[in-house]
Image (cartoon, rainbow, N blue to C red; front, side):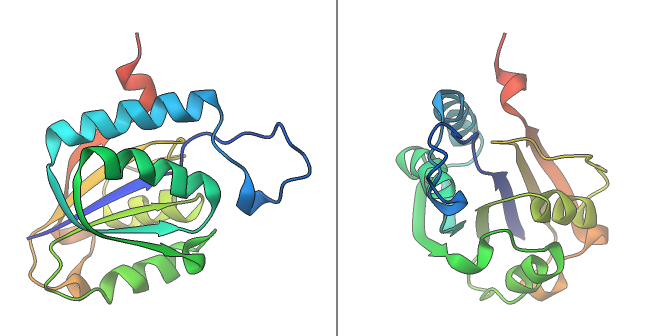
Length: 163
């Protein structure tokens, strides 16, 4: 069994127009939403083998909340995940070492929405900021992941946790 958790970074700030897109921090709502979703996920799953995260400031800060609440063996920040396309992201996932059973990806749209649509029957229009999709694959090798052997075990968006 392989578990894949896809998370889009939290809402970022556009307050400082002089910052590059890579350097934009989270805004107030982004911090609140990251706390909510990481708290929710920590009740669902207690351990993740690898967190693979885009190198942007907003994805790193989003990852911080999950690293605080979930036992994560290894965290990798990667420039390649910055606005990666779905096919390239699937290639990275499919090339993971099979000793790894649980993988969390924190990155950007549209690549994440497209990966979710390729790997599930959800047909998302848009994975919202801090949106989280958990998929279990009944396989022993990451190279075998596809829509036919994956099952969504969790779908949670920040609005689901707010009154």
